[in-house]
Image 1 (tube, helix red, strand yellow):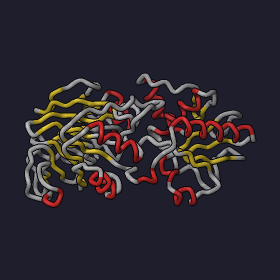
Image 2: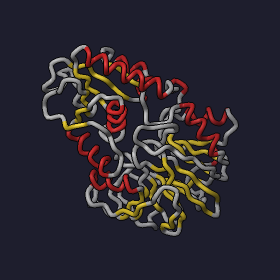
Image 3: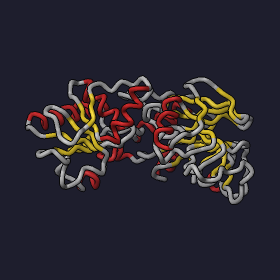
Image 4: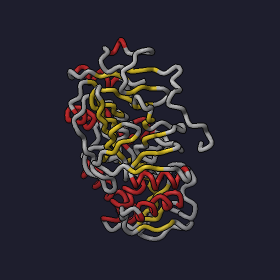
Length: 345
């Protein structure tokens, strides 16, 4: 990825320009707003700063270090924690740090990073322009988190938001209920002499689950890929408690956290009696649960659920909302509620 040629700011062939002043039916090629554009990704105008673009750019804002939002840009603009995580995952990427809440000028744009509540270091992006103010959420979650900085929304004229769980079936239980469910089921497994093996994304969810468990007296062993990321959390000031590297055999009284793939029908190498856990917002999907009905499904998410998405729109109170990374039906839901909502292709 790092060997790709940086895209020139003047390369705008076949771009799809979006004009916030147009009606939804009028959005299409050839309309220039001067505020933002899409071209296999989102760009601020006129500088063409990439926003979570996954191919190399001259300048790219990275909201967080999940690889569907990052690339080895010539200059990556992000928070300090994200910069450390990106360098771990992509190599020696040149970065410019945006501290939370401090406006900095980048290529003529005043940029401000606001906490997104998704994972440690994740950030929304706010900017002001003669065309109006813009808030880009990236992946976000409202409410408390064990490891991520609490999200901070602000008013903006235009809102670009991810809506992964933009369907009413993704109304998640209250966080305290979900945490109690996780702790109870893990504790019961340990009492039965089983090894609780918890499937969670290597970056973000694994660390949050680790912190939740260790904060309640349950020590954690981590798969090497998870452990490497957790060391960066520790070095960056996010303490995860009593966790260690899984070295090929379980330890009595400890839960084990692994990436999704190592959980197979064969269980965990070195463990005789395993109880499997899937910790994800997708646990609300009956089809997902049916794929492994014998396992424990815990609906703990690092994305805003349906109600939080609606709350975010109300709090930002934009003139127009552009939705991405979710069901297009959420746009219709917002329109029914009186919002000027559009799908960002």
